[in-house]
Length: 301
Image 1 (tube, rainbow, N blue to C red):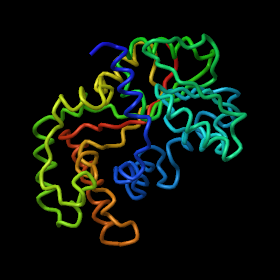
Image 2 (image 1 turned 180 degrees about the horizontal axis):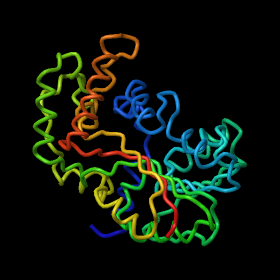
Image 3 (image 1 turned 135 degrees about the horizontal axis):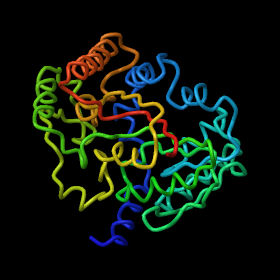
């Protein structure tokens, strides 16, 4: 697949909102999110962006860049939070950019966010422009990590920081066999009502297997294209100031399409999800699992 066809396919794939599916992702579940918050900030009520604000950005920076902004929720939320006074926000999908502009206008933020459709595999960031750069659930879609990180380094002003909240696990979700076995063992223990999947029209998912590589060629070639290489490549141009792993090796695929079955208003569901999250931490501490997600703060070398 040539670069242009790849970019067009990625743009089309991410040009349609998938809100109904995404709320069944573990990252969207309030109980899992509280556990993530605790691992990053030490407080289940303090999210990643708020932790960054309190620790690194006590006053709003004049201008920040959001890389891979999608439909723009990060910029809208963090402008209200006080991370920045203004944002430039870019994404490969022109459809997503147009929708992000509309959402910003609905809440009166259109004068504080400048949106552009940009393919960072083909275009260049302006030098010495930004006080902070954010990549939230977007960097794992970038194939040319070396080029992106070089650009981000030169686009930051002196003293600027690069903030990432990212999937850094196995590329193209090719999870190692021992972890696949663990996921299937846990699935085998769960009652049927917790396994009903939005991807199977509500039928239970009894087993998990890694997606075939052909899926990525046919649907989204950018998905986790070099995710396992993000951290080592980042270190070539940046010094990591803070690295907060927050799991996902078990919960990400175990709860893909099924997280919404855990009702946050039912004590038993909340307890079970917390037990699963705690089990993941124990397995990380024992060296059985590695965290597949992390919140990272870095400064240019």
